Structures are given as C-alpha cells and as structure tokens.
Length: 191
Image (tube, one colour):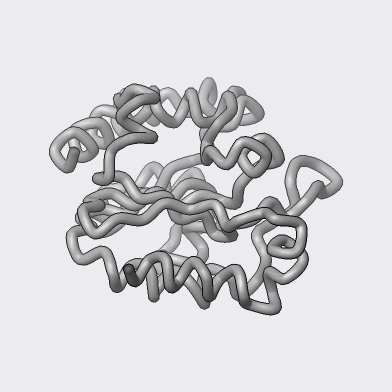
C-alpha cells in the first residue's frame, strides 16, 4: 500500500536516521477514508513513548473540543493525524522544541495527495497555521482563531489545547462560545 511505502521512505530519510536507528517509528495516522486531518506541532515525549498521538492532557482537551470520545478519536479512519514533525523534537527552554524545518514541507503534500476525501484540516497552534495559512494568517494567533470563518471550509485554526493555555482560554470566552460549537458541528458532519 502507498502509505506503507511512504512510511518506509520517511524512516529511510537521512533526516530521520537517528530515530530509525533507535527503533522509533514516525508517529502519524493516515487513511484513504479520512475526512478530517488534524495538524499539530509534533509528538511529545509521552506520545512518542506510547506511540499514541495526543496521549496527554492536551489530547483530553482536544477531544473535548472536537466532541469525540477517546475511542472514536483513535479508532476511526475518518480522522488523520499529521503533526508538523512525526518525531519528538526534544526539549526547549520552555516546553518542547519546535518541529524541524522542512519536515512538513517534504511529507505532508505526499500524504494529503493520497487522502482525497479530506474535507477539513484542523490547524492546531502557530506552527501549523504558519505553514498552511502562511500570509493569510492574521497578526496574531488569537486573531487568526477569532477569524476562523475566513479559512473555512478548507481550514479550521485552533489554539493549542495545552493546560498552559488556561489563561488564554479565560481571557477569550468567545472561543468556547463562538468557535467550539462550529468546530463540533463540522467534526460530527464528517465522522
């Protein structure tokens, strides 16, 4: 199958050689049946260790925002997961290091080309929004998310669901009131 071929190419790529040598496979999920693609930053330590993306408190909040159970989130072929990097990039001064430059540019187009039924790409955080929306983004992540309707039906920008963003969520009640109901409606329409 084409996805297995691409996965092997990712593992064989010199950019990923150190991960492959350590026996760490790329962490992503694709399906020809996918209708929703979730693009986040990169797997965290726990996700890479368990080989289960969004396997943390951020994932719990994301599933709540999407209005889907853990079972559906992981078991349906209707949801694809394409982080900006398929490997844990390590720690930075605060939080995880950013995804490696050039990774998404190299692999996302090939994988998306093989998923013809994608109806919406959910862009979580600034790295995903910068890559996919580029100059169409607003001046800040907050304004990009506030103006999510401008990017529909192709994209749906979101703030990261990290517990570190509780302050942002409390300062922006419009997110829960105006954005999440639309997100849930789109997700349920495509499951």
